[in-house]
Image (cartoon, rainbow, N blue to C red):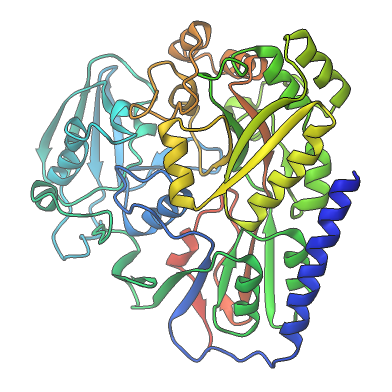
Length: 488
């Protein structure tokens, strides 16, 4: 507790210095017609077949259109197309008649749908390739209609077709979508140098994304009128401060993005279930949420939130309440010599480092010596994907389908065939996933702890007065960039 209080006081001192600098200047109002959105981390890849980081996924949602999206209950719903199940192994998709063209003015047809999903056959390093291994053949019926034939029946197949559709001609030319995307979404790509500039197709509104890693600097830029919009990635003190400023509007909501500790099952110590249980009991999630997170944050026991349709009949999951004495006992029962030394990797984002520091202080009481290594985002994420870690902290963003259990924990989903970055393998869980027994899979995951669940972080968006038609979303997406406006 003392370590946490010291940290909180330190953060408040820094915050106080930063806020005092705000009050010495009169905030100016941006006169540019361009809406400027400051984010903590720029996208890494704007090719929807490869993108896995949150910023890339969120940009891709507004640049591309997918055949399918999800409704408020996270069930698959028509987006670019409607579908019918012709047979258990054949699905026919019919594109909307009044669909938008690609941003290069080419018409979007069934050929583009086929080319997009056919391309996964040759993309051996795409994390989504395994998702479509069950596709036997894709047939273009006419310009508006395409059929997917499967090797095996899959009643959840439509829910997988959320990849943005790419122009077939450019796929054939090996066009670089990752840095200069061409889709058919609400916003089109303009340029990407020091900032990523997008332009809304229907009215020409330009929106630029700039990277500002330091959260205090992002707040200062908002108050000074240098940026118009922030979303997420701020410590609670800064969010509360913004709520006191008359020139700023702050909107908040509950969140569904799942934060967790990733574990490497190649590590002998972490293979022991009692060690994993000890780590879970060494973390006081309630205290972290109360002291270091924004309102509406809540504890998590599973990837998919309680309101997800697969969890509506689930009984309460096993509790991982904070109990350092029990954690120490479990480590001793596992034959671990105390203190257990663990290395935790995270990004250099100030809030993520803060979480790591609190975790370090809490785990000390449980007989765990946690070494923190904060790395630039590119290096950190590369290490995670390559399995070069012992522990790491990340957040699953925008997860809608229970297929995530296969992608994240299935023994056949080790990268590059999925997101099982900890190299976890459990025959019983594989069987439950194959049977689509989601309640059983959830219970097995809670029991075995291939991840240590942390929380669903509350969502917020802060904007200059004059900004309208933009709200904080449950999964933190940026879809409202398609409607946002600014009355200058």
